Length: 516
Image (tube, rainbow, N blue to C red; front, side, top):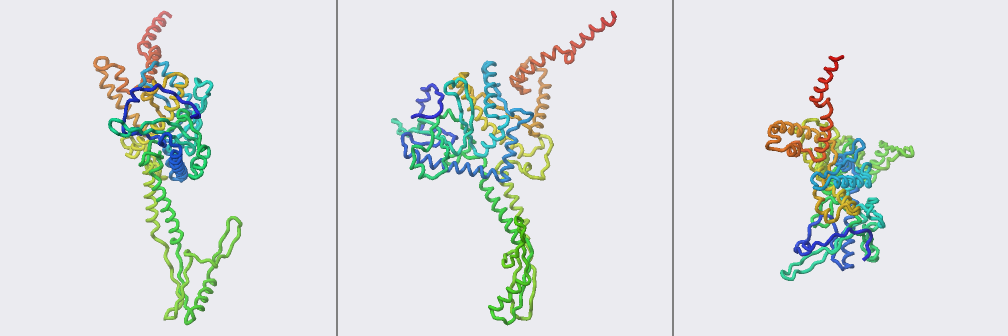
């Protein structure tokens, strides 16, 4: 089978092949599991699943256009991706990686190349926002097939409604126990430029051209990690807010309708028709309505004023006939609706529920909320949870950089696929922060570290090494320790920071002054 793209081959692990399990591996990539070799069945299952997921992505994007959802997404994205002073907003941390310094420098340089390919300095906000909204992101890794050792040439974004991952599985019974064992035979992506959101008949009529099969290593696939109850479809972080958004829109429409129909006061005209017959009594009431009613409408587009007295709606006065019986014509007033404030409170309640479903603190969403500049110990519980939620988002989003860095290092021959599997767990990414709460928390932690440093200073070099104190008390990483040592060495030669050198300079200057 010819397949588009490139594959990074790995050496077969005999031990892994001998391992058997009756339970399939747990995955959160949303791949469609199909039976290997069944073409007709494969495409029926594939089309049904993809069409539903494409509609789900479209639903998420439609939700993101709502003002409340858009405001919450902006708040989350601004908190996760911080780019100030023309900085990239993210850096790679290799402190836990036990390799030579020159290898670390090469990995750091290649990571910077990945950020340049993504244009992360300018597009970082949009990349994260699309991933958060859709719940998934796909990038095509473009390389020069004639010179793959030059690495990735371009990372091109793919609409998630046009591509889907497929996993062909084989089920074989175990001879000794009879248990049904499941193994993955092949994985690939299917891409269709027209998308998969169309009817099943068109797929069955043209099975051979439903999509282009792409090698798995040619695509960078990053998902949210949220799955549906059947563990077959990837969900977005907006999914829990679907119900709350629909309820909020229904309440807002009800409040608007109630406000228009019940808010204005109206009059009730009881017209005395005496002993007139029914037909003449109705005609008399209509004549009175036409005589006293004046309804002019203004068309803002054409500037015309029209007389629409022939129309009568629930927003206007009521005209009711009355037979003689001691009371003549009477005019009463129908009071406007008084339940509107209660309805507005319900709207605000469901608006708060919507923000809670998105895990955004209500204090950030209220227009009249005042930003609190208190200490970290005075920050609300919602802010702490929101900070942890953003950290989890960053960790999951970092799979994009790990996948791109893996392909870049392997293509350039810096590492092998087997070595990458062992070192990737020690690679971390640190995002920039501008949260005032984080700054206050960092200052308080630093103050506590200095207090503990003074307490343990007497034991330095006796029970605890200086390196242990710097790593465990001051929480300095290897790069910071190396940078600090260089700065200390430079400052040690500067009399401005070294009292001994300053004293020596003063002593040498005094004899010269005496001789003069």
